Image 1 (tube, helix red, strand yellow):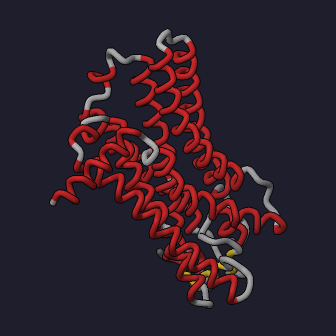
Image 2 (image 1 turned 45 degrees about the vertical axis):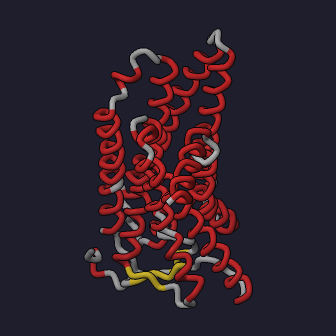
Length: 312
């Protein structure tokens, strides 16, 4: 990626976490354990769905297995870099690597927004239109939906990333953040910034608010339908399923809103870092526990796999 206007900035310095050596070692241990557990959880879910013929035929679990792969990619886009910065003190990241992380991380975040909408659509069709659900949410349609989520997610931020990369950066080159985020990057660019900040804001708001509105609308209709249901057993089971979905949605959109709707300022940098850690590292760890590992069908498939391994 070539720098515009002959700027002298060839690299950035990620401030990452402050504090002394002891704090950095503790954080390194914490994030290493968290990263390994997150990978193990999501790989377990993918394995269960692939090996269990019952789960692999259900659209909800196809979406969940794809969502687990997305979470693996999502956490791997940021946490290894955090571990590197905690291990080595120089914290230097090249211009091209910074914008590559920016593009990949935000593309995966957009893909997650689309996947949460796809899951909301799946639950809407399953609960509000149960008779037509098998035909509507067929495996072909489900696969097409998943591919669409990935394509839209990775197309969404191409224009903003290219636009920001063409700005002039003449110093300072210190990013007071854990990752290459458009806000801190734009604050380092030399004026005039042109339309880049507004374009970035429009694209961000469109993908987050648009998908959040669709999710809220879908689950509102689902809840209204369940409240009218006459079978209490069916209603209780459906409420239990969508409650886990709603927790995941709230964790993701709540933390994203806390970062991108909080007024900018130096006094907010530590709060922004804390919330960023939550939605980049902790949420991907919690999602498998909330979404799948507390699900009866997933636990049954897990026990079946264990019995099969023991018998061998």
